[in-house]
Amino acid sequence: MTIYNDGMQKRKNTGYHQKRGDFRRKLILEHCLVIIGEKGLTNFSMSELSRRSNVPAGTLYQYYSSKSDILLALVSNSFISTNIKAAEKYDRCQNYEEIKIAAYENFIAFYETIKATPALIDLWNGFKADKKLQQVDKEDTQHNAQLLASAILKYRSPPDQGQLINACILLMDLASTVAKRATRSKSKNIKKLLKTMFEMAWKNMEKSL
Image: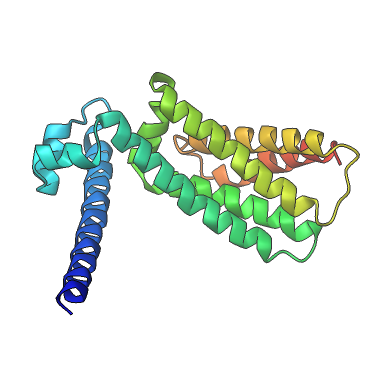
C-alpha cells in the first residue's frame, strides 16, 4: 500500500511540475513578445526578460538556452496556431471554390495576426540573421503548401501532383512575403490590394491543374 501511495504521489508531483513548467514557458514567451514589441528585436535581452517575467536568470536558461531558442519558440508557436486554423478551414470545404475562399481567408488572417502583433514583424525582419528561423519559416511554407495541395486534390486531378505542390509553395511564399510587407502600408485600400495580389497568385497556381 505504501509503495502504491508513493507512486501516486510521484505522479502528482510530476504533473504539478509539468503544469508549472508549461505555465512558466507561456509566461516567458508572453513577456518576450511584449519586450520585442516595445523595444524591437535588437534591444531585446535575456536579463530584461528575466526581470519582467519574474523568472530567475538561471531558471530562464533551463527553459530556453539562448535568445535564439526563445525566438524560435515564439515563431514555432505562431505557426502552429495558424496551421491548425488553416487545416480546420480546409476540412470544412465542400468544393474547389470553397478551398480558394478558405485559402484567401487564411492569407488575410495571417496578415491581420502580424499586423496586430508588432513583435512578430520584428521577428520576421530578423530571419535573415538567424538560420534556424529561416529553416522554420521554410518548413512552415512547405507545410502550408501541402495542406492546400491536399485540399485541392480532393476536387482536382492535376497531371503532375509534384508540380501542384511546387505551385502551392510559390503561392504560400509569395503570400507570406506580401502579408509581411503589407503591415508597413498605411493605404486605406490595402485589403483590396491584397485581394488583387491573391487572385493573381491563385491564377498562376491553377496553371498546374
